[in-house]
Length: 361
Image (tube, rainbow, N blue to C red; front, side, top):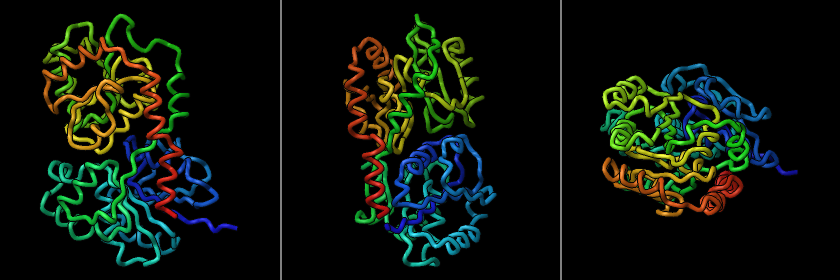
């Protein structure tokens, strides 16, 4: 009888972000014959809790920030004595990398990096402090999983993370689940006579929605934009829409548990981010057969989109070029089956899960 390896996944919560979605896919599809799965959350909340399988153990630390969880995390790891500790999201990864020397040496510590660290640190955190923490402690991990080659090179060039400790594993796409959900509603979700643009993601500065709204103001009234997501920029963006006089060309739908039915019916998805680790929304839109026009920003976007095959790339933050490419793409004839087959070949769950299992075993 094979002894199962015990894995502890540590996350802040199961709120609606890309990392949480990826972990929900991992814990759902990892082999139960090989792995015993425990999910540790700083706070048990979030939309993706409902997607978790019933056979995993969930531990709620009931704290609001990683710094308040230090002793709880140490005690849980010592008590459960896992074979693997897996963390994702930057501040939590930093904490685990600092704690590793104080825990059992037999445990394999694995971090999944969720963003382009050098850019995120410049925008969100005290740069000098977090740069020092990354350079000092991040090499403590046994493995660091990067979503894209760009992300791996960023960690190596800026923080001297050893390349032999890093591996690129792209995000998985649960194609069967997305296909099913995309057909959940037969109702027409958009105005048929419009050219329907869709953007999905957190309403935060880094997502570049202000640039997208300015682009919309340059397009004629036949174009309509729907935005799915919530965040701190919502009121600012709604005010900007009024200022630009495009409030009648845009719908803010907030968080949607099932964005895929919108992706399937949209004419085009737009990604206007300033940087992206490895954008799930591009993969998911493509699974629905919908092409994506995206800024060629730092990160993994350019590793997914092949011009003329599953979308188009435009110069980052270039509103004029984005407008022109949206107009061009709305007339361009894409092969939907080719888009779907391309994503299925490269990013299907079974293929990506095997890569994770190789690291875990």
